[in-house]
Image: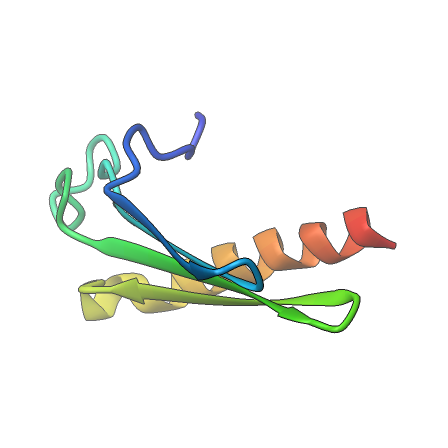
Length: 85
């Protein structure tokens, strides 16, 4: 199942060295605790010399979803690091 967001609600680019993306999650089929649009993900990309600092904020997650989402986002970021090297 693809977890790509279907809609980006806003991109704020105050400078070429910084990008801010915010979108609402589309939910997870069969999970009453995560209906469509119930959480928001924000990603900030900031230039740091030749590197990029990536900050992710996942808002409004129910307490019972925190551990699984932490594991999921940790896996995603680990894959990004592997792609970079």
